Image (cartoon, rainbow, N blue to C red):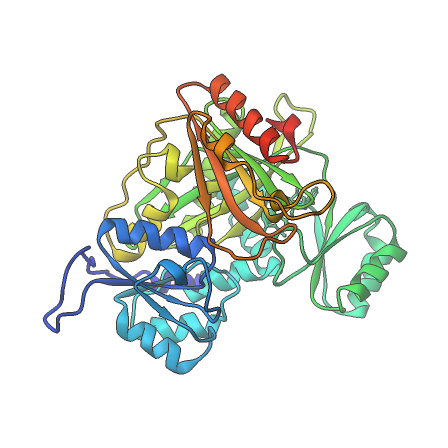
Length: 416
Ligand code: ATP
Ligand code: MG
């Protein structure tokens, strides 16, 4: 695998260090969203300076970073400035152009590498990767077919009735359920492909899901791998709504298999940094169902936000450790946790009028940790923040999460 060639000896970048020219140890991140913001917070707490490259003047990460380079992701001058300021660079955003990461990697350690980000950017390559390591990971993805040309569409229409009902997904640029259309017939498939602009897609068989979970793995430059226990995720309208992270959230045997599979998936491409692997649990007649790998995100993930408040080392701390060549401590979860995503909908009442959420009531509940990302405009479906609830026991955490969800008018109350 070519990605393995990116495994290089890495001299640790020590937090708080200053070089002979007086430059402070600085870590850089491409992208200014909430993942970048929480990365910046973790890096700064350790004693690093930070630089964010992001075109938007008011971005969540740009607002809190020491340096904000306000250019596009492929601007040569902006990238040169980032490389000049930083001793190592990461990305919070998987759709960053591959050339950008390649260019930066010529002069600076970049983790994850352009090669592995390239795989995660494209569902077709991602599925090929899952297939290539299925023997070691023990998991396969949902049955699917690639549709890149009208001829392939016709073949799938004629020969792959087994994939219906299915979901047509664009190979690139999908997130939060965007770029996906559910189809029941060959005619609907053709219409959906046209609606998606005839771009490269995969048609995936719709599976009977009993649950979804994800695993966060972190791997250092030296190949040392650590992971968090799998968390169970509940989606609403294709967007993550609730993450359950406590013992018993997933059946133990299934959780162990998911964890082993995620580690194998990261190892196979000599991944450096934090990787999130998402899984489906499907009805297959067995006691707890079968495990199917869905997709991977080459970065910290929304489903791992609870690690900030419930673990001794968070997913963002591990991203810092991995890119800076620091040791990779095995994280320990010290409290059961539930994370509730706060979408822009929370800022509107039932009549669609703007409202301020009742933070006073929410924050009076025990064990609530509010994270707002500093976005000015609340819009339906936009990730504005999250609320993590921790406590000494699962029953208590569930009760508080239920009450908080009720106060905020969040969907999916039944799932808590
Ligand atoms: P993300 O925000 O995680 O990047 P995404 O837009 O890339 O999401 P997917 O993870 O592919 O999209 O799908 C979003 C959700 O749609 C899944 O979490 C799952 O609930 C549902 N889904 C996707 N594919 C299937 C499938 N083959 N069968 C059943 N449900 C599915
Ligand atoms: Mg997903």
